[in-house]
Image (cartoon, rainbow, N blue to C red; front, side):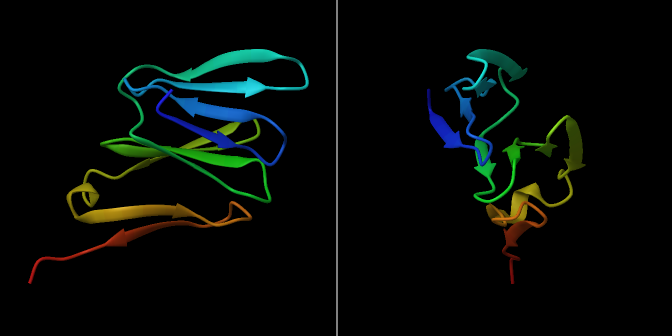
Length: 100
């Protein structure tokens, strides 16, 4: 795995080197492929809420329980230097730089 994030609900989410994303539910000892290869370049997890996000080249997908929201980032991706998810999972932030 290229990256693993601990989730507030006790689960784990991981990204492999090809960009596939897997979620592990530790209580039921199950593994679920959430996104296919090529979908994610980075993972973010809220520390105090069961919210996490998969950052890709063209979108960010935010997962909250059984709900998923996809944000199209193609208009800003070339300028984003970093992504952050607040500890309560309510705010997704992009650090953007603009050329002079």
